[in-house]
Amino acid sequence: MSNINNLPLCITLGDPLGIGPEITARTLNFLQKKKINLNFIVIGSKKSFYKACENLDINNSFINIMEFIDFDENIDFLNRPTVVGGSISYKSICKAAELFKNKMVKAIVTAPISKESLHLAGHKFDGHTGLLGSLFNVEEPYLMLANKIFSTLHVTCHKSLKEAIKLITKEKIVEVINIGYKHMLKINKTEPKIAVCGLNPHAGENGIFGSEEINEIIPAVEFLKTKGLNIVGPISPDIIFREAVKKKFDLVIANYHDQGHIPVKLLYFDQSVNVTLGVPFIRTSVDHGTAFDIAYKNKASAKNMLNAIFYALKMSNLQ
Image (tube, rainbow, N blue to C red; front, side, top):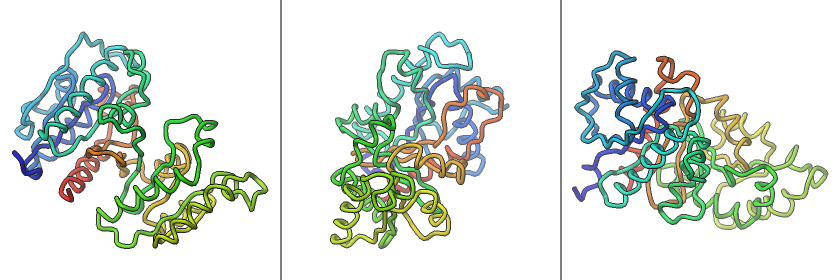
């Protein structure tokens, strides 16, 4: 199967004690009922997947699952982070990376994992992004939240706020924006309109509330303008997302995790997709966590998972 279009998608079920098995079962059932012709290799705990299917009253024999790679351990269905959950999550991601490297799948779509579970199992990564980066020898992958209105790319992500501020340099901002710009062109956004968030209150107010805008962000923006990018900033974050909703920008650059995540999740929680950029593989994910508190209670929405699958298909079709 040398043609990427003929390859299946890979889905990892995430933490078996979270909502990953449920949202995957819901999604595959929806696709099958709608006769959407897609094939999948599913990786994770078959026990948890079958439990989710049983709770949802769904037949667990899916014609769109080409192969189920089972990592089963002694699971007690507790609604909290566990060593077992972290272990299965880790093994599933490693297997997905192996399949992609061997050109067995066209893209990886991941259900949520618990970073605490991952650490309890002895795997000290900051989540999917860091672990996959390590498996593909990428020092720093970047996280983008995409939806139909605009996308948000983060200069830093899983860093403490204190550490993130130190990482806001002209060079890093330029690197991240170039990665985002190339991605937007690739998904057919001609002349993407890019806006950069300020770091400090009121985007620094000409140095009154901090110097990062003057020393790092403005020089990066001005440099990129000379390269022909349609870019503005820094703009105060309390304004920038309001304007993005009005479709004034295609790509917003956030400086740290919560600066980008909070507004996007408030606005488009069920619609946004987590996309990994700056890497030699295609990976999308839901933009929410494991939600242990509602796992196996038939309450989890599968909209994010469905959107993640379609975005992964879009990216793979443009390869």
